[in-house]
Image (tube, rainbow, N blue to C red; front, top):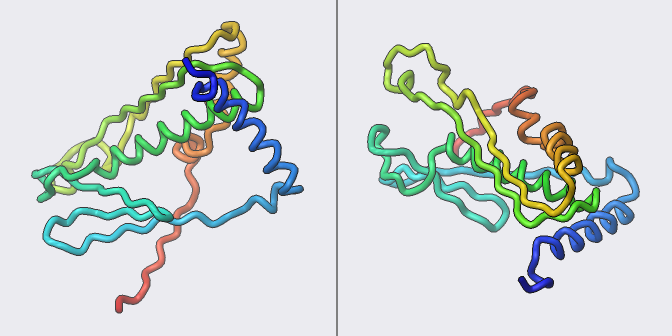
Length: 177
């Protein structure tokens, strides 16, 4: 594999960028930022357009909810976000700790039951539950080093922690135009 395009080189670049960012910030409080995501639905498809910075993602439901399966559902997007965050946490840990990695793969699965939204009785909650992560790391590092990385990532991933230790979400209603 071309060394310049390898995950190993990425981790070296990441470690250097993180060290430079920490030096430039000077303090943890100066790193605070407001992040935003906005979603709109405004046409016959009912497709949900999620806008994050200059990026747009499309979310949709299946035919049972009047959708067209034009994109992943909200629960699927949640699992994708969790998988992305946990994968990134592994990369951060490997970069900070100098652990060589060849590949990181994270898959999230959950049970989901939308029956209550259809007016049907169910004992299942109306949100994804029994959330599970499956992680595969390929690395030339010793087994105990990778075990330490697994432990660090499991404790450090901010979005999996958010799901395990929920915070209050405030919903404010804004006046329409």
